[in-house]
Image 1: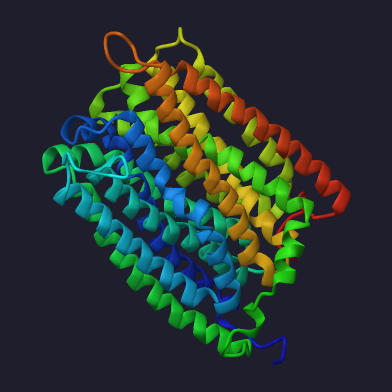
Image 2 (image 1 turned 45 degrees about the vertical axis):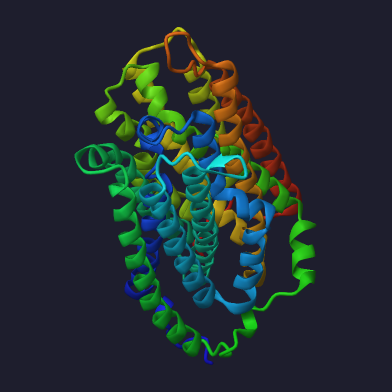
Length: 446
């Protein structure tokens, strides 16, 4: 094909349309991922769950990805069979997992029966959430590779920032509406709405698949996806790259201080900072709102001026400050708590807008699916282990005589993890200078 021939991705309208279509799927996924977090207290009162069981349920999101290596297999399938097959499979898994979670809450909720030492409703809800987690994480790496494909040499960081921002709408809506909906109707109502949204996300991805197939035809990719095949030599090449390990460590450390923290943040806002229950979920969702507003701004800035490694250091430093202040036992001001959530939202915008486009600079396109999958796999170790650790810590060391929990020790744990993230971000900047990844350079090619 003549290099001057225009394709769908050369049209700004078409590539951005493709982005918004797949971003809707991820927005639905993020809504479902966060919809149960504000309902922790209701789960404990209506279904008699404990904090430990809630931590088990939250960590189940990553169980299959970590222990059965499902995310790694998803990345290999992505590089072998392409984005259309993998994305549709991931969307189906999300719908099925959410349906199982919903059935556990509605049909078996509050049961005294046990399975493998866990209450039946907790076990089934966790199993469904784990299947959903496989689909959501594989969908995440698929959408990231879609952006790398459709925005190569163009506004890649901005596109990734917009996708993250739209996904955060799902998170913010979940935190804002979960409690009001559950109280106005039923405990399972917010989750039911999430299942409906995921069905819409599946339909959206089917529409995108037709667009992507036309693009492949235009650039003369073979029908069997030759340019997306992988080999185990590519896997070895990825894991031998020092940039991979630094990005992966930064990813797991940074996100372990954000997502698991948000799962418990609603209760923290209520018990320590006396935030009203009616708005505590919305406060806990402020980082998602910050990401919604700021990630595209920071992504556009990185596209044009670069400095991705430096921005990752800045975001990690901000994370340390947030959790360290939350750990101070003598601060109980709701205004401070809300202000810290806003700062966390800024950090939550800075690091992802710099991190994910950096992966596309470190690895060639044919290895991106595997690279993202391995990074997400390591991230999921933290997303599985940290919620379980925090839930166990609360039950074992933090119960207060009058009821509720003292969150000082959990926040100290988050602070220590954040400190490690800053060290890794610094090492990544050193590696960028040594190996010439180009992380500090702009993304847009003139």
